[in-house]
Image (cartoon, rainbow, N blue to C red; front, side, top):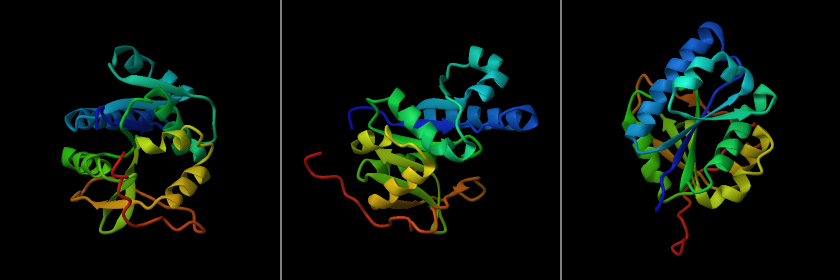
Length: 195
């Protein structure tokens, strides 16, 4: 890989008050973990959240992307699309919701290493899919056209996903709930030898 992967930290609309303070703490910690794992970082958030975090945005060295108004249930796809569009030279992207608290840099390193050989990688704990999830740059043209979380699920079902069991006791990793009619693609997708 000739460039770095990018972690896209997706901030929900409710990033204000006490919830906002906790999310901001998580974002700062996740940014530090991503830096240790040699990942570039983009924080993608709705404008309302960024307004609530005005001082942080002014003082932080984070690359911040504002999302246009969208429904909360479309946040993951909208954040992923915006983050990919802002980092087109990345070798891949990791989608990390802001309320994930990653305690071990090794979790991100395991996923990053797996992304060197697979199109999509998923953290799993006790074989249950969790976020973060990573996408190889070969999926760039599809990622920049995601228009809904449903489209994100369809994309993940079109390509087999490499599940990466992580040793993450105590980490608050998001359960991943694909839509009932779309079972999560499982298996191994090796990158084409000429890629």
